Image (cartoon, rainbow, N blue to C red; front, top):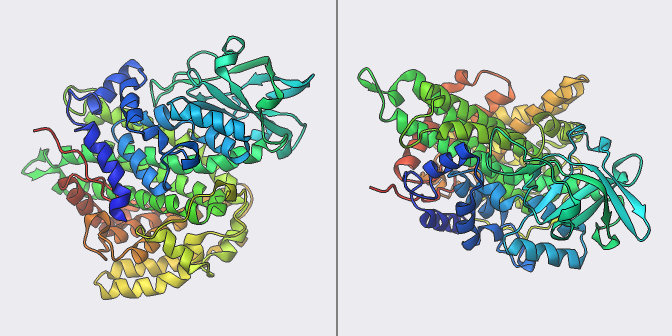
Length: 570
């Protein structure tokens, strides 16, 4: 089953070739050239479409090749390590497609599926510049007009908004509350002469990808262009964004993988005095922290990609927690890589890697907030903390946990209709922790990993202490801070459960049951949960660097599922 997950990504690597080849059209140097010119990755997107990459998020009934999110995550991450712009260039329609799939008519399903199969795109127009994440304050309005409607207002930061052939637009049809919004699906090929897409919107990251601020001036909308029932669009859109948060982690991980690989290349060749940079105590510690951050983010994303098949109704919390941890851990890893690269992290230099690190920094910063701000992400589930804390460590479905956390277990089909706006106190990673932490701690101690065993017990105690912390949390920042703490503890529970359920597998290319990666991940995540300086846990994190160095030497992705990468051109 590990080979099943890695197989398609490995095939894509072979197709695209060595990304370090300065003359290669699908490598790092080409990505930097496009970035500096603000060019859309047309050639790279084209070869990906020929390989069926754009079909991987489409269900079989739409003519797509989607199998499971864990496989899709690896595939997208493998492509994104070359250039994050492959995500918007080939997969930015996933939000609109999910919305149409959830409440569109059979004819709308057919039209969107046909458009996406041939490589077109559907824009998702929800946010407005004046209101940001306060969606209830949006003012774009859809008003009755005879047998149809008229659409007026302006939307903000619509991905691929300059080139998309259709657009899913959420507009106000009522006066207050979530039920005041309705969706329409615009055919822009027919409506182009009446739609002002606005000027090209420049961004610091993902340069060359077109974002638009479309304006609607009483645009005629036929009745058959309404999607679903009036008043249900906002609920559907928020559900669809749970999927986007999950898939955005692939972009963050792709950036971090390349940043660490680039930094390790430098640190294993550069000498300071008689020692290689990677062997000096300070730099070894910083690289170990960055490595632990990436390994933890990888585990959290992998588990979430499996969890959405088993428990999609929990993703109003699970998806937000995964998004937060991955984005924050990747930001930390890239910042520490920049400190190791020092001057090279800010200079545009010639030769392999020149300008690449700066692009990675900017791209990762954008994907961190492209679907929602950090604060809005945490705030979206802060109100659920009392119910989550009460249920944490109290039980849960052990068979569901086994299915999620063992990467070789078959997954049930993904059912987007089960997505919900409230998890109702259910969080599988923390909810089933009590059944796992004790046996796992004993197994770790017996396997000669006493530090990991102690960290597992510390994690369980922290999760069991959540109800008291929730009761003591004050208004204002207290709930947000606690939501962030919950996200880090959720992530630590994911890592421990992944090790426990997958200890028979060669995770990270290591021997089955190896716990070095787990020790480092738990040390990093618990320090972040406690808001302690991670450097104080550095001794626990050092093994993470060795795990990554081994994967690098074997030309494999920095992942629990170590996808074989294209070999360098000699």
